[in-house]
Image (cartoon, rainbow, N blue to C red; front, top):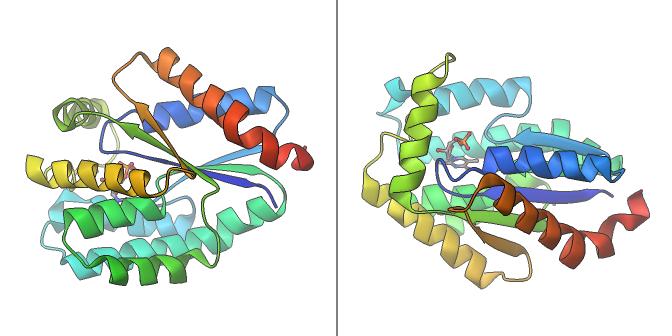
Length: 219
Ligand code: TMP
């Protein structure tokens, strides 16, 4: 089996940039790396993504939203993540199950037991070996995310960015609580530094503290 690392954080925390940088670093060390994301990562889940993030769908109920994230994940795990891990790859995934706990439970208020049950079902026994949480102030993250949406020529994926500030604050607090409850799985990094400084911290922690012990066997 390979090694599964997920990246989490609020909108605009910088995780997509950091995944790319960690991927390049691991590849330069000889690891086979697959970078993927949720919601999405394969054609069926990408179609679900476009429904989930479309700002025209603001009337979507919280339960519909939860079930669609679970459906997208079930497909992504079966089609992409599980096969890549079986081939011995390091899989870096931009968001995974913790996002559903942070957004749908802490953010939307769905009880955690329901979210956990669906996560378990969708994951098919695939769980992150390590999770990098990039923490940043809600106002800083949202400002960055809005700038990105304005300059992006693709579809406006902004249904969550349009949520009120207190929703994002609940999501951020949710992430911090999840990380505190599972310190052995989480690396929590302050996202307010330069991208180079953050990347160095993540790479050092992943390589020195965790990854070395677990995946040398797959090289
Ligand atoms: P992204 O902006 O990182 O691509 O993520 C898409 C949005 O989907 C983001 O606002 C967080 C949200 N999301 C959930 O609400 N629940 C989930 O389970 C996942 C994976 C993402």
